[in-house]
Each structure stands twice: as structure tokens, then as C-alpha cells.
Length: 393
Image (cartoon, rainbow, N blue to C red):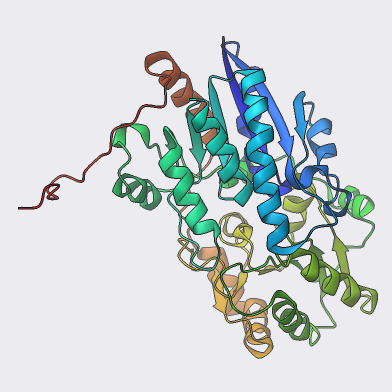
């Protein structure tokens, strides 16, 4: 039996990994080693470890790497330093045959470094993407080069990973795990959802998530104030905010939102809703506003418009239902107005999502099992694109 270690550090990434984790847990040839870290273990981010426990997964180890009393880039650097040491010890103890990670969070860079040093092959989900407005972009590509198996969300991203020198036989496009979530989720009934979150969902409402743009020179406080100024003009709509991530500036954004919500009856703030509540809300919403990847990948599955603000998601493939605007109150306001129009709604309904049609997790687990049976080590050979000159003439 092969031991597969899955690491989750945030609410968003866990929601995307859930189907993969369940596939591993139910496979008789595999042993799940689930390690929980990051914001899952902090009260101010919603104690999202509770969602993992409610889903019935056994947590092999909890590894705290974040401190509530440290913020900004100091928090990020300290978390990375702690992570590489603690995960080195965890990998020596658990001795997994493979590590699965998803995405591009800064703490994953340290975790993957620890795995690489311990000669543990890495399977990376959601590589090959481009997000020009965040340091995530560089981190994602670094993780790609450390990984032995790759599971990008679409064909364009598969080709990009190969362009980075990864062997085509190790790069598999089974679609995006976020899209699989949409098709497999057991959605909550409206009355149960209202009871859970304590708010009536009658009428028009928007889901709002705004994260720090880590490569932008503008400070996060200024950015979120532009967003809040824009929605001020829509008093006949309700706005449901979810908390920003733990990047530098995330806490400042959350504090600004919480202060705003206290003064506006049509707004609510939740540190975390969990995947089921969030997707159930998103499904019946009028639109999603902000700079979250869920507006790019998941929202188009529901045929709802996305008001995508700023450069954080710049470079990702987009459907026609996405309305891009700058971090400027007037631009955001106009984008919301268009999303509310019949033309905007119809455009979103007709848009085609480029991120696949589900059943992604089955393909991922199948390829991991094949790899462990036939190779199972960290040795890699750089792949040169045919026709490229590899030696100076």
C-alpha cells in the first residue's frame, strides 16, 4: 500500500482538494496521510479545520506555521521558515510515497522544498497558470519545477508546463478540480442556507471576495476602499463578503470590510463560509465581485457574471461572462451596472467555461497510482521542445 500525503493550508485550496482526498481515502491500494496547516488553524480565518473534520477525514498531523501577532511580509517569511523545518520533520516521521499540493500559496514553496530534500515525489495540481498581479505566479512555476507529476486545469496550461521543460508523459489535463466541485457538490436548500448564515437571501445579492494583490504598488487599504465606495451606490442589493487570504495586507482588507459592514445593513461579512455554503450562495447570486479565482473558474459554471477587479487574475484564461475593470470606484460601479443588465446576464449565461467538465479527481488518482507503480522517485529529465536548438552553433 502506497502512502499519499496531502497538505492543505487554506479554506479555498481544501475546497478544491476535497474530491481528490476522498478518492484517496476510498482507494484500497492507497493510504491517506492528511496534514493540516496554515490559516485552517487560526480563529480569525474561521477555524476552517472544523470543515475538514465534519467531512469525516482523519487528520494525521496539524502543523501551525502562522502567528496571529505577526503581519505583512514578516508573517509570510516567518511562516515559510517554520514550514520548511516542521514539514521536514513530518516527512521523516510519516515517510509518504508521494506529496500532493494544489496551487501557488507561499507556504507551499517551503513544504515542497522539504519534500524534495527528502526525495518525495510531488504531484502538483493547478500548475501552468498565469496570474501577473501576484507573487503566486512565480511560486507556482517554482513548484512546477520541483514536481514529478502535473495536473493543470486546461489544455493551454498543459502546454505551458511542457514548455517549461516538463516531460509530456508527466503532464495530464483532466480539467479543473474547481469545475468538478460544481458538478459533484450537494447544494444546500435555500431555507437551510439562510438559517446557517443568518441572513435572508430574498432579492438580488452579490458574493464579494477581495484578496491582496501582492505585486501591486497600491496599498491594500486603498484598493478595498475603492471597492466599498463602488458598492455604496447599490443600496437595493445585498453584498455577502468573505474574508481575504493571509497574504500581506489581508488582515487590513478584512478590517476595512468589517468596519464597513457594521454601518451598512445590506452587507454581511464571514471569515469563511466553507465550500458547500459558499458554492450554494454563489449558485443563486446575481454576480461575484472581486479578484478571486472562483470568479474566473467556478462562477462561469453557474452562468453568472463576474466583476473581476484589478490585475490579480491577469493572465488566466477567461470565459466571455467575465467583466474586467480597474481598481477604481467608478469603473467598478459601471461593471456592476453592466453585470445587472439583461445584456450582461445573457452574456454570462451563454459563455463557455474553458476549464473542463468534471471527474478530475479520478484521473489524478489513476495517474498517481500508475506513476508509483512504474517509477516513484524524484529523478527528472528536462524536456526540450522539438526543433529548438539546445547547443550553441
